[in-house]
Image (cartoon, rainbow, N blue to C red):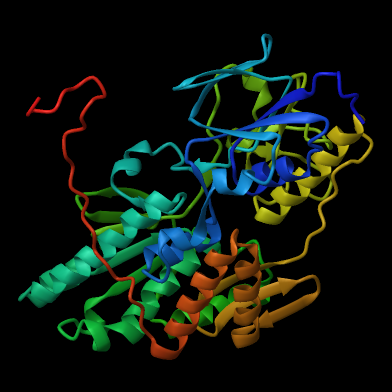
Amino acid sequence: MTPTNEKKEHIVIVGGGFAGLNVAKHLDKKLYDITLIDRNNFHSFPPLFYQIASSGLDTGSISFPFRREIRKMKNVDFKMGHVKCVDTVNKTITTQYGTTSYDKLIIAAGTTNNFFGNDKLRESVFTLKSASEAMRLKNEILDHMERACLCKSPSDRRRMLSFVVVGAGPSGVEVAGAIGEMKKYLLSREYPEIRRDDISIILVEGADRVLRTMSPQASEKAYEYLGHLMVDVRLERTMTSYENNIVTLSDGEQIYCETVIWTAGITGETISGFAPETFGPGNRFIVDEYNRVAGCDDVFALGDIALMTTEKHKRGYPQLAQVAIQQAVNLAGNLNRHEFTSKFEYNDKGSMATVGRNRAVADLKHIHLFGRLAWMIWMFIHLISLLGMRNKLNVLINWVWAYFTYSTSLRLLVHTTKYPVRKRWDTPDNE
């Protein structure tokens, strides 16, 4: 225990995702003062971004303000900002709003979209790495549906309702399945002007199966479920370009598409101030078994942004929420003891993905579950992982309502209107 007259160490945590929040919760408040920095003022739940995009949930149901969460933690302060630079010599971190000193720095900033060198795609495709990106995709889908209802030309309507999802990991499979459910169950109820054949959904994957990080049984079932929802899966092909609404695949096939959804890869955002050798593949910080960043004193990295290799995981641990949470708890324990005696060992509790209603796959240790049971387990796990009882209730109510009615009240196409922002030194016109 730190004596009352001894100054507590100041820890700065970059990123308020699963890793950042959990390490803040488990650090001893008697030993440390903590500053949490995030570019948003809320924590959101990435596994359900696809449900925002498909109008299944609203953003507020899967997001929780940091200030409400940390008000229970008297030793934690929150600052909004996007980290621009770290000075590891003087131990300072700089955002667009100012500079903060630290004694120890924990980087849990997560990752961003990886376009594999084709950065032009950033302006033309839709992504799902944040709540705002999910809302943007939701508006795009609803806008195309509404305009298709007004379109008199069948060929123009089919062009308008063409969707290509790139990447068949959990995010790609889930968003493709969600659009497939809209196609199969929603059109006759809410968009009678549109026929099923007017909508095309193509899922492109470079590997030889979908959900390649899961078991072969799960991949096979997910492929079958996607077929039930009329999703056309193209395996062992990658997208090489997207120009003038034409998707070109690696085998030379060209597909007209007005909405391309990119879920093909992730990468870390490089923070200036670190030596190039600090980073490994995917711009991830190279860390040891205690999550200490190589070559840096008192700097740690957690979660998706950390690259910890072992004999079993030669390319690093999977970038999953469970890895981030377990690393956060382990690091907090080591810091609370003031000694690094507990090496991180990942306890793989399994993985799961949902394709649609009653269509899910789950690999739990040595058990493989499919269909309704896997779907119910998926819902339960995601429900209890949300922050805030109100959020849990909102999500549960929406899911139950949608299950029995095949409908949702969240298909609202809201266009924002920009007005001039009055600067604080401006005077009103009537003054």
